Length: 482
Image (cartoon, rainbow, N blue to C red; front, side, top):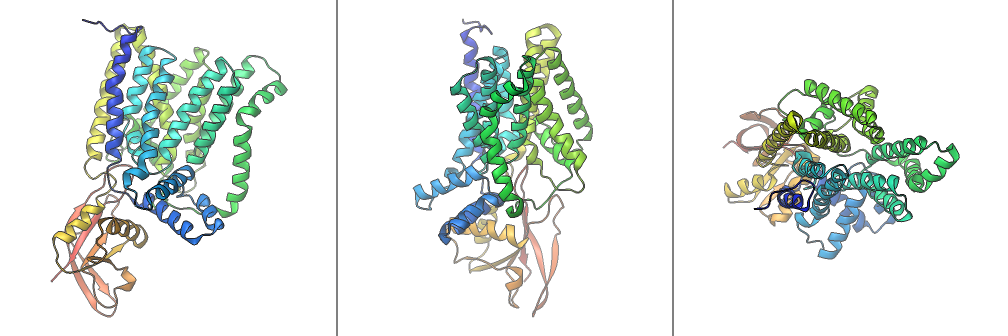
């Protein structure tokens, strides 16, 4: 019988089930229906490419719903498949980035101890938001991969500087910035961390600048150039339901830790998490570990600054994804230290890990019931309960119309299912009505609609198609009363 030795090679056997879980969860996450933000990105890409105008293609990258590298990847997939790509194909970049993020997290944790590598890999592999966003054709998963990779590369560069690591760091930083603009927070944290390391070595300002410019110069130039153009040209999009900053932070932090932040108030949890993170950062300061600077910026300072400067609800919970990723890396660091200490401290780490696994498993089970939305199921329900071509109207016009239009084309049912915006019912009420603006409110069993040129008509609730989690919409489907 082989007795696992934390300091020996046998510990790497424990990575096998973690890797299997990480891959399986991310493939599963990518199996649901495309939702509005993914469809919107794809539609914008198609419009730009069909126009044949370079200006229209360039305009894609000045729309808040467009995530640069993800859009480029969609274009490549479309080109390779002749426009007949599956949802899985469009999501494959995010899936791959999500899987590799787990391996990078293991490398980061392993720099402290073998147990640290295992714990970091387990936390990143199971965290519901990271599984969720690894299954979307959006830029968030790639941004997380770039953030973890930059952290790992900077750790290596600080210890043993080399041109190869510096070039890799700059390249991965550009990947992060082109994935999502909130990556700028990560760059700020990395820059201040590097600056503090150089300052500790008592180098002059000129010497410090000379060492930092190669690492961050290109990113600064890119951001300044982009910002100069985007200032007057950026179009906001995908922000239909802005939240209070505190609610957004609470949703993302709670979900990352395995707490159902959608059903329960997170104020108390946020206070505990903030205090715990502050305590962990103070512990790093006492350890003379300069990574405390990065954690301080990314995990604490950024969310607190957004909250303090807020004057109206104007943020979305996913803006804080990079913050909670490094909250988890910080948690893994603390848990690894507790584990290594042995005794009651090791048991404390074990209990935290059990609660973490149980909590996130519960969230993932809930995500399996509806996911980002059941749009194909809505259409199939209509098809199964009718024979003749069916007219469908809906609200909100933009999001529901784009989403259902995409899935009707995917099901090849354009002759049976006809989308009719409410302004074009032309005196004849639609056979079905969809309310896609519930956002937590229960659907009414009966609704009365006034159709211009026809009068009042009643619609009875046929079925609700629920969504659960960080993306997507719940649809209440109503049928015209006979």
